[in-house]
Image: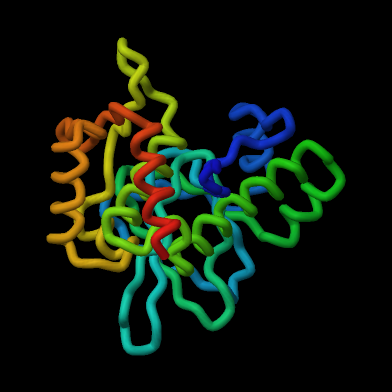
Length: 230
């Protein structure tokens, strides 16, 4: 049984090239801004804007009326996102120096609708991101801490295009342990314990802020075992 990881599924169509995507977003941008690392921005749903992350890395969080914050996901360069949702406050925090294009969502969608390739790209990207959020909320693929941490690492590995000389997948940079704990819904100490256990089992090798996946099949087996134990 294959693990369903919709956020990182490969698209079934020919993807839009980076150059085409950059050109389209720049053409439709109403504002282009550069932000230094560790800048926090509250995204206002009422603005009816979408943003495109031209360069850098950001993390998106939501918070409720009493200020409880919850990490949604990390957004890499060349991805877009709506600026907030009705009745939900969203915070964008730059993890690196970033350049962001802001555009009116309705105007951008009108441009996309009449181009099949653009429409497919937008649809697939939105589906994968919503799939990740749904899996996270429902804890699909692992109810234990080990299963959930393993699933997160598997997702990051699936998204990585870097490999070492032995063909092992390299995750260049992990979220910090606090953010990982927020994401999987556990304590930071449990995340550290799970990473240590996976390393002792030679499934991963930690390397600075990142890690190397030594055995993707074994990692997948752990997630499947945790799933069937629910």
